[in-house]
Length: 431
Image (tube, rainbow, N blue to C red):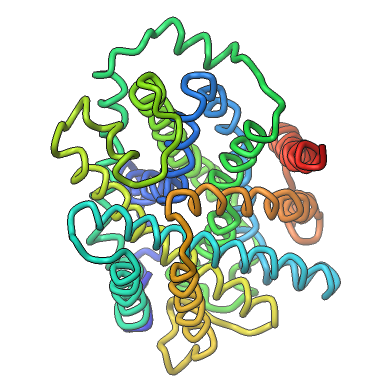
């Protein structure tokens, strides 16, 4: 895939590359992008506040993470359009408008929070005001999207995501009580107060963020265009082998993402929570969780991880916002188009980035904004997931590739769980 710098050249055999290289190149990197700065801030806050008592969220979220990303990929691969292009074809305009507004707003807030998180992380190393860093990062991201390509961003920054493994090593070196770790993971003490439920909804929202699966559906379309299928009728339908390959890539990516999720909570629980530091108000406090591994280099590792995944995730969010809005109004836009061919699409990317930057000048605490962005996303997930389940069970849309029993069990269970979590939080707030 390329950006506006030029059209992509299909593979000689017209097929996507496969094997281990593809799993690493797509599955792992997609999983890393899901652990964006918002996710890192949310999971770190959960570990610091509740310690090991929040580890249970990882195994609970894993099947949910898998099914929502797979469903979105399936819509793009089988129906041949992005999520909101499919919604526009199938549902009334009023419902489309509500869903687009929710997803678009969620993308903007998440992008703003992530830019702020990147600014806070870089501020650990560079004594420059965070808002100015945010502007500089945004200019670089937009420049690469318009004049370069997303592949370029991924090639430059994807290996920085390896810094996320620092949380795995830090958790091990902190020498936690592994019996307590296992007990909290599988037999956790549960709470039902608003503070606990807010963090549950935030974790659901940041791990199942709408930007992930709206992007994933469009990524499937972009890859089919890369294969030479430039017209919708050419992209309709998918073979069983294609869906198996897609499922495998999603599983690998979500396993990686979930592993990092688990060890971020574990490392902050074993270090910050254990030392009585239950609130994370700054990037420096989050970086302190890496000190058992890196000592004075903890700030560098933390900044590298946040900035690395931020440069992966922010373009996904702003481009996702452009996909959502342009498809919602019936327009066209693709990363394969040049700027002159898709002025509205690239214009929305610039506008979304500008709004995200502007939100950072309102004086919000960057780390708390990361958590609240997850809560906002948590409220947008249930209705979108409900629509995705209906579409992937639609006989006409799926052309014989409707969901199987296991996918439906996971999908409807996840839909019910997300509605229940947000309803419980609203109930707790109302008390």
